[in-house]
Amino acid sequence: HMLWIGDRTRQLDGAHVEFLRGVNNPIGVKVGPTMNTEELIRLIDILNPDNDPGRLNLIVRMGANKVGDHLPQLIRAVEGEGKKVLWSCD
Picture (cartoon, rainbow, N blue to C red):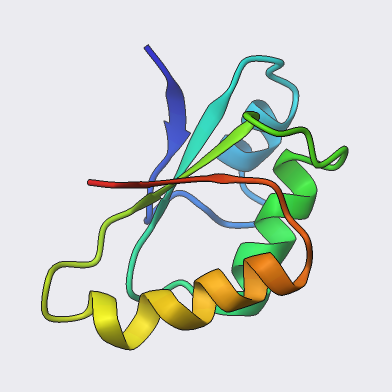
């Protein structure tokens, strides 16, 4: 089992983010079409401050109609910042 933060519970100052920040196991974050690049990078910084490979699984959940419009810019932002994440699709 993997603990994860949902699209509706990903507030940067929220209890879910604060709790999972302290968990040492790999964790997941659902990435929906409302996620912007700045929020994603900040979440990665909070949840994986040491940029450990395998720590953070970004679970893309956008639907076939929206993924082409939203996902490429998120990937570019994450790669541009040198963040080590696992991308998966839900």
